[in-house]
Structure formats: structure tokens, C-alpha cells
Image 1 (cartoon, rainbow, N blue to C red):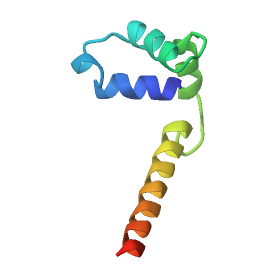
Image 2: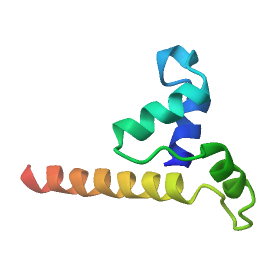
Image 3: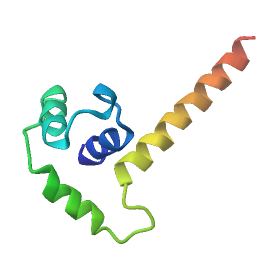
Image 4: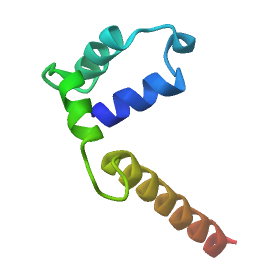
Length: 80
């Protein structure tokens, strides 16, 4: 969730980017029903990742969404 929070913050998706991270994080924790945690510490842990990509969650989310769209495209073609 921390990857998502920081991504939303970087994209300025909430209130035209005028919501500080210290307000955004608790709001998203509440929306997702997750216990509020120290997102700054988790972000530091994410930055320390040494693999090819440090954003595992966002990468996987993008992959799964693209797969879904491809499946939907295939279903649309089959219906014609």
C-alpha cells in the first residue's frame, strides 16, 4: 500500500496534488481498512530494495491490469 500511497502522491492525484503525504497516508489507510503504519519507514525499506525494480506492488498491479484488458479485448473479438 505504501508504494500506492507514494505513487498517488507523486502523481498529484488527490486534490490536484495539494494534499501532503502526512494527510494522504492516513486517509488511504482508512479507505483501505488498514491499520495506520509508519509509511515513511516502509518507504525507506522500499528504497533499499536491490532488485531490478523496487516497486514490486505497482509493477505487478500494472501487469495484472494489462492482462485483464487483453482478456477483455479477446472476449470482445470473440463476441463479434
